[in-house]
Image 1 (tube, one colour):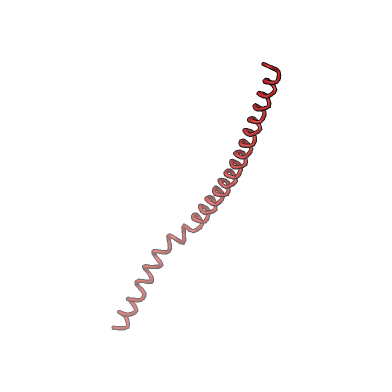
Image 2: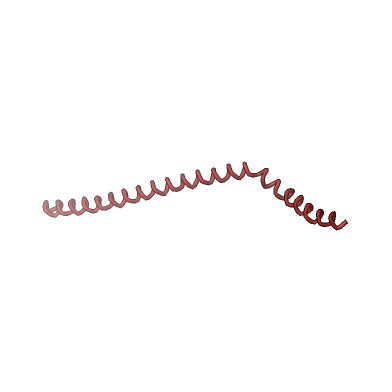
Length: 82
């Protein structure tokens, strides 16, 4: 009799554990796809961030060139007397 009680105390939690794990194991492919999708989006976001930083640097360079051009234009106009 004691043997059956001990056996039940061991087997019942194992059965409950298997029943609890089963839905998670069934969803693993979906979870894997979701993780891959998130990883792709993170990679795309990183590429967009790098592109934005590059554009920011170009814009700053163009702004500097514009300031230099404006200074030269002002100097040319002042020399002409306009």
